[in-house]
Amino acid sequence: EHCVVEYSGYSQGSIFLNDITIDDSGKIYITDSRKEVIWRIADGKAEEWLSGPEVLDPNVIYYYDGQILFGNSFKAGIEIISQLFYFN
Image (cartoon, rainbow, N blue to C red; front, side):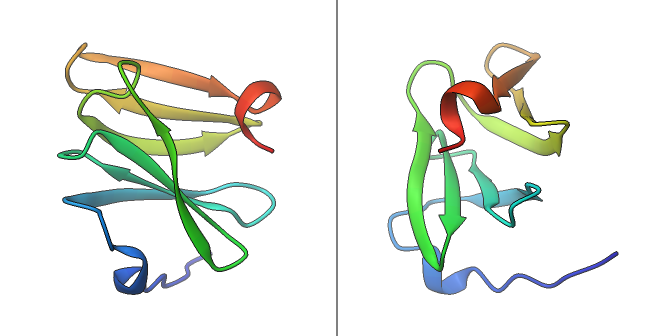
């Protein structure tokens, strides 16, 4: 299944949007490697969903089984965000 997401209208404040995933409810998550933020688009509104020391140079993002997995280039590893805590 494929879809096209035009997110140029959501890029205010972003620096380098690069990878994207969509959860089961249709929320869209986009990494911003240079701003060190993961954006979330829900109901047509974008927000800085996750930032701080746990999101340093995020790259590659994937939604699977109620969790967001993303590459943390600064730590050279994969971070897992549980739906239980962050997916309101």
